Length: 309
Length: 69
Image 1 (tube, rainbow over the protein chains, first blue to last red):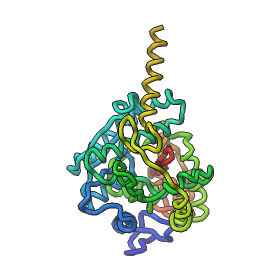
Image 2 (cartoon, chains in turn purple, green):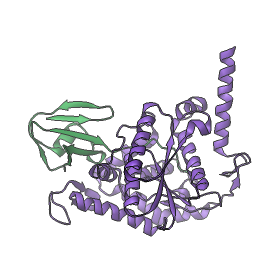
Image 3 (cartoon, rainbow over the protein chains, first blue to last red):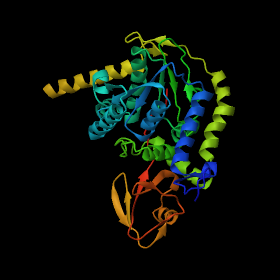
Image 4 (tube, rainbow over the protein chains, first blue to last red):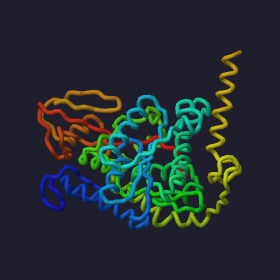
């Protein structure tokens, strides 16, 4: 198999583009896709400070790598979820990455903010672990960006993530979720920063290949709580579709963004308030994060009382 | 050849010189879900892996996400 651009031996075939690339041309293809995403959705400018949410995985570190090379003013944010050895290792990967490139990294621990790490939140709420984890991440990313004067948070969500999320929303006809699925969510409140996904044009396999070829030391092991998660099942289904029909995921997501999303966007009207407790943005009186922290505190109190009894 | 799989990490032996796409089919792995690594290189589906080689099939799927905002 030969590189489409230079004719040298290829290292990666991209069936959905009917192409294969050598390493240097693939890296350039990847960076061009990120540039196009940033340009098309006016995600951020070179004058703006960008908070890059990093997990130690391939996607977020690949994103940070591209943005640093492109000359953007970035700061990393690692949220310590307290998921046993997985969190210890992923944090070390982020610290090593930041130190090697001389870029700043903020670290915030869910345990300090919510009152318990993700494994305890899972027990306390009796909800899937991804639920409390995702809620905490979204809240803390926004708050950290605000506190550090950064107008935008960039996350490593890729094409597969976005297609799987869309698939899940459509499967359950979560029409309230559909207008919020976008590569770039604007700030709709003074206390809500922009959220952007510069990797949305690139598949999971492409981000993994980029990380490998750039010799980025990322955590290959999966989060222990991801096994059996619905989003993983959806990804597996979509990957089978993609295998049978290259470009299926791309067409599904991009067709939605170009042709269907505007209709749902018009239908949505949400009033945003500030949480009476913490001041962050919510659609209710008390935000979901403060409710979660309350629930953790209450259950832990009950646990201690039972233990004493 | 030795084939290294991840999550959980394990090794399987595959006999003979084989094309990557045939190895993946035999192990029932969707090509879209892995990187095929031989030493410091990525290899494409049409390449032949030799009897004495070691390849890693590194999964690319990550997730377990809650619904976004």
